Length: 347
Image 1 (cartoon, rainbow, N blue to C red):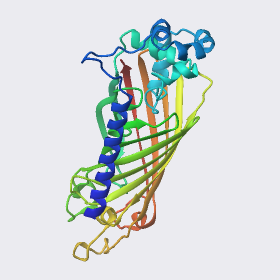
Image 2 (tube, one colour):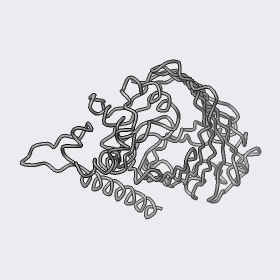
Image 3 (cartoon, helix red, strand yellow):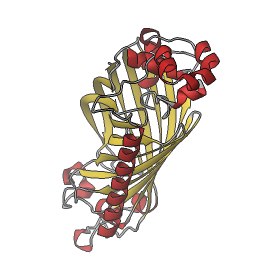
Image 4 (tube, one colour):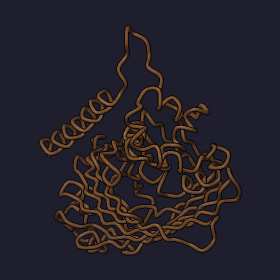
């Protein structure tokens, strides 16, 4: 197990190193220690890259000139959805000149206006979460809703969200992105249910590892390999997901629908679903699960844009335990429902 964890951590380190190298390679060179300014306008581009601009001048000139104020509502509409912030094309800073990409003009305009690399939404959320995997009851929480992204450049971004935790991603192109991220797995107390009486409490686990995402039009596919780095269960999980953005006739509404599955190795399954012989009772027989798919689930999210800054968002999810996870005597309900509603402000 330690070998697997070391392999995952090594893979994550390689991804970070690759992203850092890509970032360094894409960064403009400095002359005599002076910073080289970014090309912000068509006129600046004409001065510094006349051949590239000449090849793309018709497309560049015909592209609509969008000011930050004009684009604000549209950007806020997309950015407050679960899909996260608007992703600039990885080559928007340079290659857009060659391709005549109209998105370059918005990107250049916003940068010229001194737009911050930060993209932040803050708010307040009310959530209903199952007490543990397989619980029959839910816990309710009120907590700050925080979603933030920092763009080092068009390809490299750090992020935090309630959906994916804390991480870093590198955009390979318009479709593929790779990165590393970390998330928390909920604790379990023996007092949560009578079926847990006499069992040791389980603390919050910290999971981290690499991920990959592929986007085609409105569909995004994801694969995450996350290892326990806190020493709580010393195992790993593999998460697969698919999400599709659903077009709606009302421009102020954003919706998406997703499905996901969770695979756990032996250590994970033992920690959360095993009953030792010494822990067995008349109503809780001994149980020894094996590795395998622990759950499948579906979720839906709807976001209402109140105005250019304020938004209201809600999520509903259903998770169905499968295989040994469902067969465990610790699983009181194989189907868990959860969700949250939040009101937030996009800066």
